[in-house]
Length: 350
Image (tube, rainbow, N blue to C red; front, top):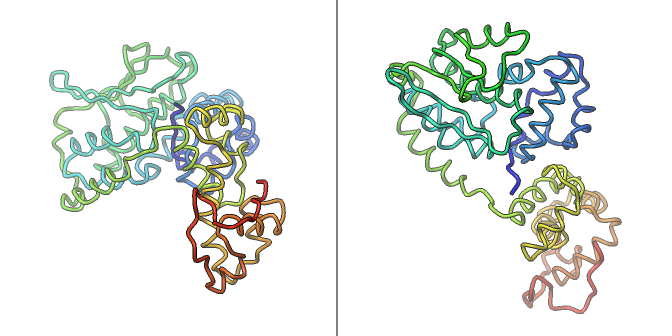
């Protein structure tokens, strides 16, 4: 199953790309990531595509510290619901444990393991499915994010004891030294941030433990991520329909694959892209047509129909009445059977 990451991870990508002489849209197209990610931070994209974006950006610009540049602008601000529960913990230890527990809600391919070594705490980074020689930027971003999260909670003057990297030392380590402000170990056994055990006891002045308990329940409710291809495709289709740009090709971009792969996996789940699209269209169209300020041609375009007439035929087949009748409050008396209205109108091809 493809691991996904929230598009919020790309929040500052355009400005960082431009700062090193890149055209962000061009690089996004090169690695086949949808540009709509910049506008919709909750849309999910493939972790493999995101990692490829970081590596391609570093290689194309010559900025081998690209991952750290991303981390400088990241931290809690990009983590969405995970940030809410992390920042309300009473201590740094509680915040780090919450980050490790819930980070997969933001980034399914990232894991943090916390262990004690004498008087030190080791926060080890694990990137699932990574290629050993092609993930330096992802490692830097992951470790940099942990560093920035802790700094944002207890102050910019805080520094870790050490930071370990499994990859060889880069030619220029100046940004690494400036960013982390502590001894660095390359060719290490793990990728990790090492902090003092005493830091774990430090109080977070702005924390509200009661709020933390409430937010934890909310985040755990969110932590029912779709598990199968059908559920994940359904989630992406729902998000893209709202943008008016939902096609199987666009969905495939989010999963860093092609349309055939999407069709194959959905067939294995006993469904199809057309079936998922049809269901999501049905959920959205009733909300859209009830808005008298929306023209039917605009609604048809947003939902991906070839023409307003095609949408009209599909609507009557799906709901058993015309759009005009629906807007007037005239609804079919008999319920739909197997997702279709009990009428004899042939559904439009979509």
